View 1 (tube, rainbow, N blue to C red):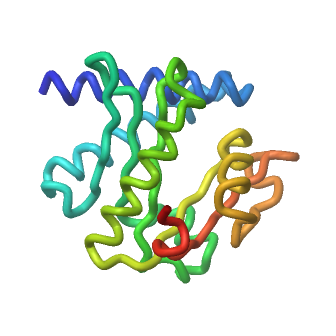
View 2: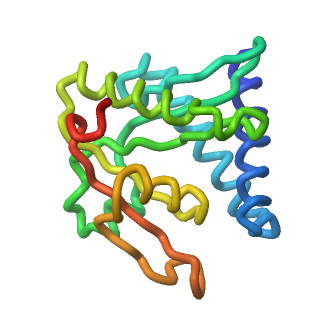
Length: 171
């Protein structure tokens, strides 16, 4: 229980920070919804012993400094792909503590989760983002998204969805 509470606090901190950096900190209900979603994903991972959702965590200086997970695809991706991506696992919940960003931790977490997918025989996955900074990083790392939902969150606020082969992203 102590560790779960610590993870909940980690998500509250990094999600709130992300919304602030994106200039959308005023969307308090969306922040809370995102935090509750992460709590639910974590609960799913614990209750299924990693079968429903699978998390990897990065630690530094005796604290969690990053996280990533994969699990069932989100309703948003199912809807916006007309169920075409429904069978794919979704990689998500990649958050790195602000004090540890731009140090390669996110890349290491990505490579770690890709190795897990490969070890489980999973050949393809998807992921999405509505955060502008993350979209820029994903586009640089993985190329253009397969699906661009223009103005999805408002004028100039797009949502992007990628579909990739595990073998093509492993280094």
